Image 1: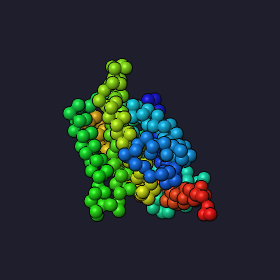
Image 2 (image 1 turned 60 degrees about the vertical axis):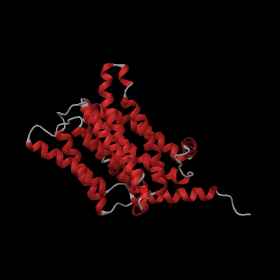
Image 3 (image 1 turned 90 degrees about the vertical axis):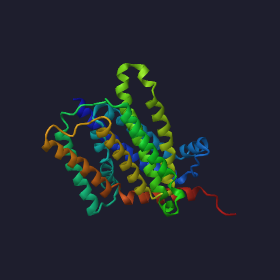
Image 4 (image 1 turned 180 degrees about the horizontal axis):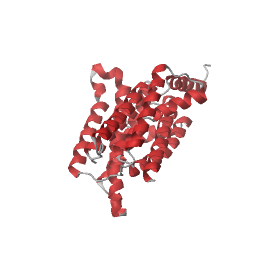
Length: 302
């Protein structure tokens, strides 16, 4: 029962997370530029944008489902399901908002359907393992943090400046992944009661969450929306899936056939994520709509 509830929570979180990203993209491009040197002012400006606030509200609900999924499922399994979320969003966009998906995007939909079926069949015996090695956590989280910071400061390399939005999105995704890993560790520490909340992982969750918040907002402002959303999601999912296997020891299976099936499922979900990150037309339409809204608010010339 816990596995089924966890899987449902993961699907809800996947859908809500990517829907919130599209709303936040629409709000971010209409808000003043994010300036990390003025975090409070930047945050206020973002939340003054209606669409950013709606996206953030959706993200809060999705995060609640995300935490439940992380607590009930092995980390690598939860993140693999979450990585297929923007395919669900694509189907919704075409079905209810009149956007057309190309052959490549529909191929991604089929891949995710097959992948989730494989994960469901081979994951029924999975637990919600939260046991981890302190040394392994420190090495993994420290390495991921260093990589995220490299992406943040990559704009200082002239050849990479044109890709600043995507690289900031990758940094944000890694930050979200670091937070997810810490949430998983904290969910195990809470077995000891309320004192489990007061730990280094709680501090890490808050700090990386704040950093990822601003990095994500700025990446949505300066990068192409769909690409940024895709890179952010894939970076978050990849980092957490790797942590599930390397830090928490999530089993790949009890025999060779199950191992092959689950590895194939994980790979197919990530391949599908690359093929169909989000409905391109939907992202472009939202961006144009935001620009139009911003223009309508500008004062007319005297």
